Each structure stands twice: as structure tokens, then as C-alpha cells.
Figure (tube, helix red, strand yellow):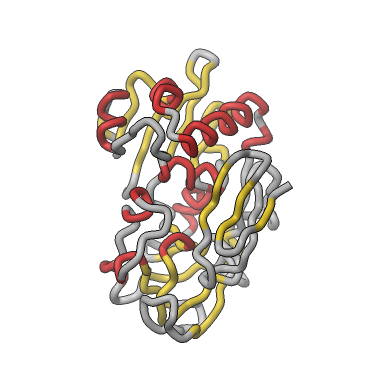
Length: 248
């Protein structure tokens, strides 16, 4: 059973630590393997929400692979991670190699591969055929959302007046679809690939809510459908990381 800590959430069963900045989202944890779609579709038109879902359990072999890969990404098990990368992967649609992927993401023994860990923790969904999955689940909404739309990935996420955890809260969001604000360009999503809890203005995303309110949300709780995503394919009976993309 998951155990909740103040500001941090520890999933004891899976060995995964999911980071939560105290005060920016409700202290809640879900194991994506246990989560199923909360609505028939990804996007609920009336509420403009994208609910979390994970389809790993629909394929037992992928579920086993995902669990092992999530553990390796969390521990920073370099050998296991490199073995999980396809021999001829692509990065942003360009042919690459395992070695280049390792260098691109600065993979090191004992250091979590945060981008992969966080994507798998959010959940993976089927992509096209029975032998492909993509993570995080937000990537599956690309065709349903506009280019400037974003997805809030947690419950009760605080929208603050300025990019500071002490700033006034103007609204709270739960899995809502929002749009990029005028200062969204100041947000650096890559910070969360280098640190669990980055600070500073660039760690906050300027957004506009459906009600028209503007403010900032901590970057851990907002995702672009075309942000960092991992595509998994079963090749010769073995699941591997086949493609890593960010941007269309």
C-alpha cells in the first residue's frame, strides 16, 4: 500500500519515490498500474479534463517490463537502462544509438533517469498496435488538444499569482486542460529532468485556466502533450525503448 509523507509521497510496494512539492498539489499518490480510465474518453469535453490512466495491465508482458524499467530508472541502474534501449533507437525522429541516448540524457550509475521515471509513473497507454505503448499518458491527447494547450496532471494543483510558493492562490485545478500564458516561454521543463524539486522562476509555468484566470503552476504538475515522451515497442518478443521524442 502507498504511504504518504509530508511533501513527499513514497510508493513502498514499487520502490518508486514520486516527488510532490508541499502546498502545490494535494498530498495524493496513485499507482498507475492500478489506475484505469475514469471516463470513456481521455478528454471530457464538458469539463475540459484529461484524466490519468494506465493501460500497462492490458498486456502482462509489458506490465512486467514497465515495472522493471521503472525500478531501474528510479535506482539509476545504468546496465539495465542501457539494455532496455533498442539497438537502433531514435531521438526526436533522428536515428541514434544506445550510446548516444545515454549521453543525451547523461545517464549515470546511481542517478535516476528522472524523465523516464516520471513518464512511467504517470502511466503508459497503447499506441496504434498491440506491440506499442507510449508514456506518459498525456501524449495520447496530442490529436485532441490545440498546440498551446497543456494538461494538469494532479489533483488540487494551486494556481498562484506569481511564480513563488508563497504567492496568493487564485484557483485550484484537477486534471484540467489549460492554455499557455504570455510568460510560458520562461518555463523550462528540462529542469525536472535534472532535479526532483527545482526552484526559481523557470520552474513555474504561466497558464490561463478555462475560467480565464491567469497564474503560475509548479512545473511538475503540468504537461504538454508533445513534451518528453517515450515510445516502447516489442521487437522479437522483447520490449524496448524504441523512440524518445519532445516536440512535434
